[in-house]
Image 1 (tube, helix red, strand yellow):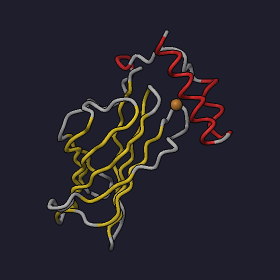
Image 2: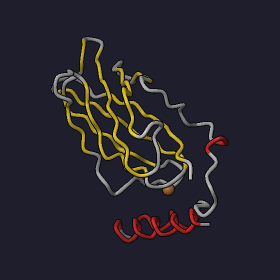
Image 3: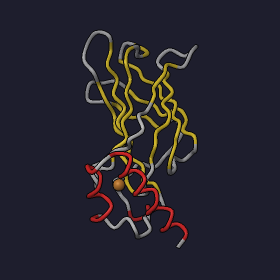
Image 4: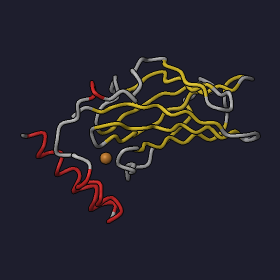
Length: 158
Ligand SMILES: [Cu+2]
């Protein structure tokens, strides 16, 4: 019961903060029931060092996640990005999105290069504020050439 109550409060807070565009989320997707991630088969199994390859051939390695595995509310990730030619250098964005609810989070993820390790980026806060499936899109745009992206999918229990 305590979990349900806390959840309703957090939904209301975000709806108030973000305006009416998120209002539909609170009523139509069963948020008051507990999310059982064991029943979710679209998510990735988190593993430090897990890697995805974008359509353009860049690799995106989730070097570390804090907390581990990814959990509700604020997360910090370190991501290594490489092109076939070597470590990536350019602009990186990280955007969380809930595909079933069609919304993200009002808190922008700040992405900064990690000093001393070419191609490594720290992303924080990745604010996964609601239980259920999240898609976290990591997009890398080089100073020259085409952008590439990878999507990490995690189910947040609650
Ligand atoms: Cu949602």
